[in-house]
Image (cartoon, rainbow, N blue to C red; front, side, top):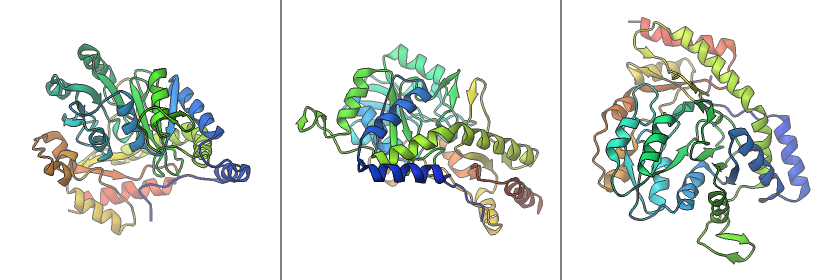
Length: 360
């Protein structure tokens, strides 16, 4: 079976974890601080705060900026549900703006239409490894005095206009096992604002700077040194992983070119795509996925139901009509792209996809 995703963990990660376990410092400690410094340098940010998940990074970023009840945050409906749920956690309201049809990222023109006197922030999602249009989004934010919180959970190392995602506003990253790099579970908040960084670190640790002195309401959303040391090793491999994903994407796009019924992913000018997912638009999507499964090729649909149509949001009386997102949900299919794929694997994916569309 060619899996849709596969974590790449080796002897270096095992040795690093063994060293931490032997040290006795297995909760948040010096390795977390070291990982924060390395990740902030990688993204070009002044500060970073390591946390327990990407969802926690989003939640904490919102809280650190003081977003709460009565506020509105404009975001994408075409993402994993944690994007919008992190807004609900604060008591604020997610407001959904439709997406671009080619990148699947939030459409800046649709953002402008959703701004009200209650709008406090924009939360773009850098979906599948491709940056949102940060030039346009930052201009909208500046013109309207809005906070920008970037959901970069799928886009470690992706760039827009020569800057890495997560460095335009306050960034949030995930290190879930299937991401481009992992800590097994974990997340990271990035920022150039010292006050936001300090507040984020308080929120993740029961609202405390000094042990047993609790100044604000906080949570237990810390990262362990075990996770951090895995992250340090993975960060050192990330550029190599990214290059492999990009090369695999070139091979797939070349092989799928010209197939009626398939639209391969795009990379916009002045952007770097890191291909967390290689997502095509596919006619007869579900039939293609079933056919590839028969050929022992894994696929994924990210995401079959836009957030505004999820049951929980229906219960909250969301009735938006967002046609681009809704059409994408019916057509997108992600094919394997991870660095462990062999040349034979890639050719098998292309061959099987061609076979499906040519068999009629």
